[in-house]
Length: 237
Image (cartoon, rainbow, N blue to C red; front, side):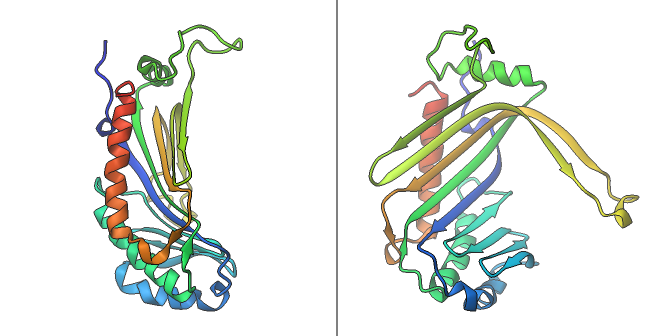
């Protein structure tokens, strides 16, 4: 019998922290002030999309998005303990909440996506089935496969919620290269078979801005997420 998987067997793909709040109409006047405040905290910052209700910036540290009712930071190179990520989040969130005068968050979310690669999709499915997380005997159901190819769990009370998804899938990576660079930049067209581990940890009850600090909250919750997911992968320990 293969050894149980742990979260360290998966390669981090992305980490996202998102704040939601009631529509902040000052966005129409102060988006420029927000980005001026964070210029020194991010390198090579450029606008990727822009509209009155949503602006996104791409930086070496990740993607920043500001919307009428939410803001988020996404990194595709997350550090294990989320300490560097938390520092970047604080710089952006402090500017947003200050200039848009946000006093309460209706939701704070931490989403962590990881992948473990296998040679074939069948190997990915077999790895998921071997965990026996669904507590079902392998047998053909609904005139389909013998075992689930995707398993989802959700926990939620009046304060905190968490969602964990494991899926055996083939992910196709494609990138379009501008015509002027096609002779020097290789075309990216790759198919990856594996298990995707998708975790979403979030608050349910409103959170006062003055009671929340991303530099403390994110590393603490990342440790909690990793610990709890290890228990799930290990058979519910």
